[in-house]
Picture (cartoon, rainbow, N blue to C red):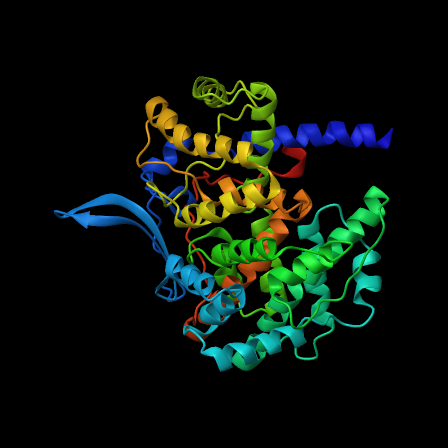
Length: 451
């Protein structure tokens, strides 16, 4: 009875919020407010400087800015060249990328070996942490579980509030090392408490790469192929950072500027990445393709694909939001370099796993969707497949549960967050505080008896 009354009250309260908080969209234009910190054409409002990552999607031709094939740079190095380097040498690359993002230089063989050893030793989490923290309060959302774990690790750190650079560096490297366990063990806790499955805990092996350890800890038999581990490693590399302007890295700068501790910063960044507009898009892509395959009934000819994509834009298919998920990006227009790099390896995995037909469907949608969008809608720049278009497909072929798709993003992106936290600590001396213009009218106070 009380719940019904409260629900009715909440409905009335909601109406009051809608009435008093809604802002006329035209006022954003009137006062030249860059909603979302972006212009109408998608250009970001410059809010800081960084040496960590650069995204290049335009070039100057005859004095004019024109779209170009997308490029992504970590500390000035083209990510495509970095990937080619460790693929050519037949080694895992994510640990090298962590070092590059944190320190700004590529490690030599000896330095990288020492750094990998440090990561391996730091993978250990406090004694009884799995039992007392992860198992005692499991959550159906792994990102929330990870945030809770991060904040609890604060209590296990004797120098938790020390923001000196050596201590923050130590904290960041520890958290980078521990994130795979926090994600996988939280998932195992979810499986046990919410799905009545066995609770399986494999300890990480220090000598293994991050990608290998994820597969080793997640799978009951700890088995994986070399191709599986290598492609997961590439996924981690491509998600490690994407410029200081992405929401979670910007969150890292904003929270760090307050002078708070590392654990609070990383928990806030996890909260940012959890949002479906940031870290959860690849799950939407997977669900969209499942609906597409059901609607097409195995008939993947171009006319059928075009008809379905048009239904998506007409809000007549899938979630009826009018969106073709995985197509388009806030910065890239002609191509997302991460999707381009991913695609060549995705095809190899599709052959190994028997997903060739589905891969051809993905390739067809990647080609056709931008054509349909440009025909149907006025856009300020071109659109192309983004990294989310293929990453969910990769995780599906690897047999990874959907509950871990966004946590895998976090396992990679904490490398970038850590680099941005350190950069903010070194360079900033002011709290980041954006300006908001008030548009409410001043009102005289009204006594309670007159309201």
